[in-house]
Each structure stands twice: as structure tokens, then as C-alpha cells.
Length: 113
Length: 113
Image 1 (cartoon, rainbow over the protein chains, first blue to last red):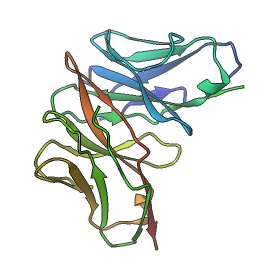
Image 2 (image 1 turned 90 degrees about the vertical axis):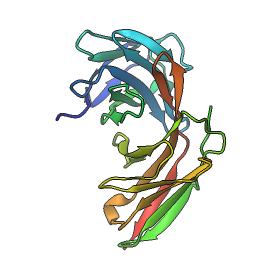
Image 3 (image 1 turned 180 degrees about the horizontal axis):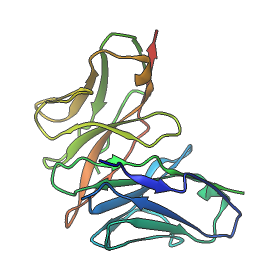
């Protein structure tokens, strides 16, 4: 069974640009969550999507957005990039049952210059 | 939110058992304890999770105290590849089936040859 797949693995963007990251969850998993990891703040929850609807959102500005498609694949978008957005962006998928196992992808490394 | 407290670092001799403690004194009755580990530049790897009972899988054992205020992750025979940051997390339900993983700073486990 394939794991959580994130693309691209590495990317470099310029301040002011926007970026879109993609996540394909494990087959059969309908919940996708996104996390940001930086050296200073650690791993922080961005948002969760289930059945194409955002179910929960962390404390991030509106520049951070996401969506989920009918096949459960998800994208997150960051607009008007700032230097502080440089981070590892992680996607996690689960089947959302009570004691479910939550699996993470390898992440997308974003560098803003 | 239930917070977790872990020692910042621990050493363990190769081949010995590694016992990683975690305090979660404010945990609620329906909140699960999850353990992940992260090797530099990679996504968090799921290890084990539990609610009340002790759990064991091919990677580790999870011992949860009867009052659920603390737990211990046991790696029975540590190898050099177990060197990583280990995160103890309480999964917080956010209503309508949504959940959130709140990561702390974790324990940096160093396995010594």
C-alpha cells in the first residue's frame, strides 16, 4: 500500500510569489491534514480537510489556504510569500475512525528568498 | 488542550531498551496518546498509539498509567537507526469527527554504540 505522497519535494520561491503544494493520501483515507514545521515554532497544525470540506483550522493567516478534491487528494496554497514561510510542509492522512492511525508524508521543503 | 511534557534529550546504549517518558496530566477521557519519531529532514514516522490499555506492535510498546496522566514508550532493543526526535502527542478531538495533533518539542534520543 502506497504511503502519503507529497509533491514537490523541494522548491524555492521569491517573496511575494504564491505556491501550491500537493498531497495524495493513502488509498481509502479521506481525511487530510496539513502541518508546518520550522526550527523556531516546531510542528504546527494548519488545517484539516474531510469530504472536500475544511473541518478544522489552526492559527495561520488567510494567506494559507487549502482544498480537497473528490478523490481525497489535497492541495495547500500560500499566497504573497514571506521569508518566514520557509518551512517543511507536512501532509497527514487518516481514515478518521476513533482510534485511527495517522500517517505523514515526507513533506515539501519550501525556501522563500 | 492537553499538553505533554518530555525530557529534551536522552541517551541509550545500543542493544538496550530505551524508555521514553511522557507526562500528560491534563488528558481527557477520550483523548488518545500517540507517539511519532522524526529523523532529520523526514516526515514524522508513526510508532504507536493508545487510549487506556498498554499496546505493543513490531516497533515498540506503550505503557499508559492507570490514571492516564503519563505514559512510557519502550523500544526493546535500540539500534543506531532509532536515533531521532520522539514526540508524545495527545490527539485532541475538535468536534464533528475532526482532530488535531499538537506537537511539543519532543525528546532527542541518541543511541550510543
